Amino acid sequence: MAKIKEDLGRSVEILKNKVDVLSTPVMANRQVSGQMSAEAFRKLKAAEGWREQLPDGTDIMKLKPGHYWGSKLVNSVVDANTATEQLIDVDWRADDSVQYRLTVTYTGETYYRVYHKANYGTNTNVPDGWSRAFKHYTLWQGDQSTVNSTMTLTDTVDKFLELRFTLETDASGEDIMYEKVAKTISLHAFNVYDDPKNPGFSIYEETVHPVGDKITIIGNRKLEVLSGSVTDSTTSDLLRIRKIEGVF
Image 1: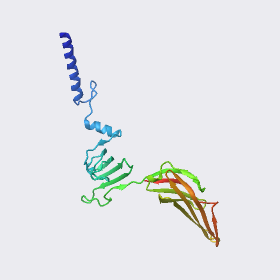
Image 2: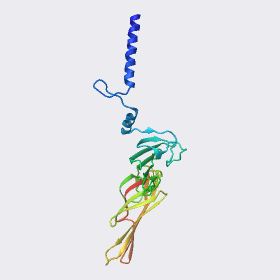
Image 3: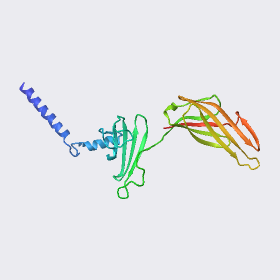
Image 4: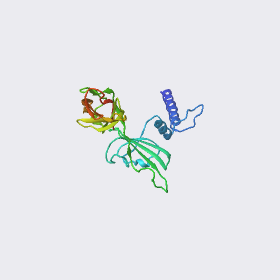
């Protein structure tokens, strides 16, 4: 029994010594691998992409360089009383030249703010406030102009502020149009002929109907005025849709 107690006491002492070594920061050498400080560990996790959680009420403008997440933050684009998760990135050149990036995880919206202190402490060169970074999501690519044809998108149109259409005709090349999402959308292109012997122009009009993740062409026509004559066509050289993007 005494032997058992002696062995148990020795084991406890050995374990205590190991705990003491692990809990005491030491320099690395051939016998000891060393131990990270809490600050060094935080920097390592940040380098791996992990974010430090911020307490409610943290002022974003007072953060040091790093990667953070939190809610109910001061000086955010989100109301400080709203429990909406935000991802914050802070990049410094120095404490007088700072870029902040904020992403609202619930909506995916991203905002930037640049603080550049100059001219005796005033920020005169950079607009003071948050600017939203608008994103273009590719929803569809192809070549379509046929009436009653339907294009299936990668997402639903109701998520976006507006749609960006890349359009093309045989004569005018590519055109870009931004349109608000509506029950029907009219797309247009215009082409002027440069030949002085045959002056004229063409007007292209295409009507589409967006619903959910589908956009259907419900009308397509070309009106051509050439040397005084007018031609209205719904069969040839029509406006073609080459790409549809959602603006967010």
